[in-house]
Amino acid sequence: MFARATGCLLFNLGGLHHEHWVQAHVRWLDDEPVTVEPLGERVRRTLEGRWIWPDVVLCTAVRVGVGSDSVDITDEGVHHDGVLYVPDGESSGEPVRQVSNFTDENEQFLESDLDADREALADLIRRLRSVDPKDTLDSLLRELKLERYPVLHGRQFRLSVGTGSNGHAVELAD
Image: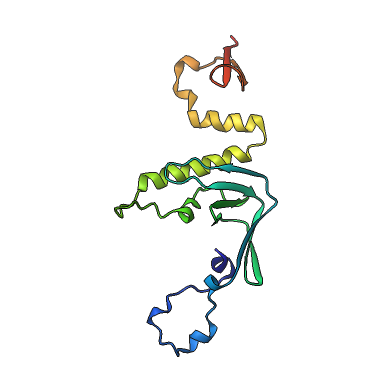
């Protein structure tokens, strides 16, 4: 992520002669100390995915340092030492690809696990960023497509969240 954010070119030196002119310009990022720190940390939670379970930190930006250089990443997640840092510009869930290659011990690609974990991360990000109760409920109700249920048309309900045996209570207000 550091190389990508700083515009560095990544390539495989395997095919180049040890005296090739480019060798003098190669920076071995793996040989330098790496630091990753969240800027403007908001919340930490564990993603309970199907294949992966990293800690997730929502923040304004992620500062990635290699050696004496650093860059602030604001639009993509960064995985480091078991923690997935998610800056404000990331909401897709794609950073799960940094946590795992989603390949099992038989070298089988687990596409359904990747899809499930990507959606789980995107959902966790949405839930943790929700700050307005009305907007949050509107968003959840839109996903349910309640207009498909004729029995609900024109009805009014009273909803209490955090109460009742289901974690909520619903009363018909008609």
